[in-house]
Image 1 (cartoon, rainbow, N blue to C red):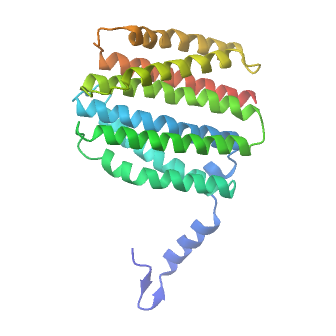
Image 2 (image 1 turned 60 degrees about the vertical axis):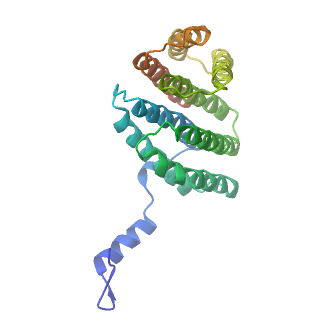
Image 3 (image 1 turned 90 degrees about the vertical axis):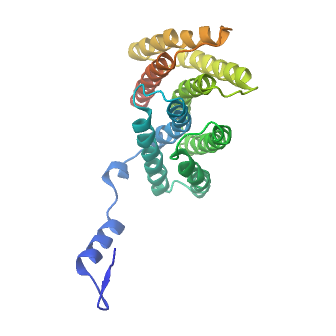
Length: 262
């Protein structure tokens, strides 16, 4: 867009520039640090959900329109980085967000290309590196809040990521990825999810609504435990996707309830 015409700045464009510079986005103007913890925590989940989308597209499975979901998740990831960066909480968090952004650039380019089974191993490693970086950012924001209550939001929010990680691992297995670490990665994820749920069940912030939600998650999670113990190696992608999304939605609701309880 050309802002200069015949040596003069276009007045309308200049006014728009001034508005962008001085006006704070009202959606994020009053964002609390707990809101920021929640938003940063969702970035962890998106890394695994995008991997799940990519695998489903690669195997030609159209259940729940993974192509559309992938594009939405890419946009959400982009928007969250910009929004968190705009908060300028402190220099350490800004540096961590820039590291997230640097890792994200090449991944964003690759993940929008036609899925290829030969590229997915690198993509998985790159997304796991981004996951680790986003987790570091979330931890820093939780620490900066100066409140122990942010930790419950961090922990509850992380369960969303683990639900999508479970789904992504299974989808890669269904696609035919021969990963020698599949079983250990799966067991580690199941253990992490189980331990976190036990901590959440003991929280003093739990309301009847939160406890009811955690009970639903426990039932849904049992299905993944059964699959983890199964030796058949036969999984139904649609059931995996549906169950993981139900856990994701429940944990998202629970995380929001914790935020209201604080």
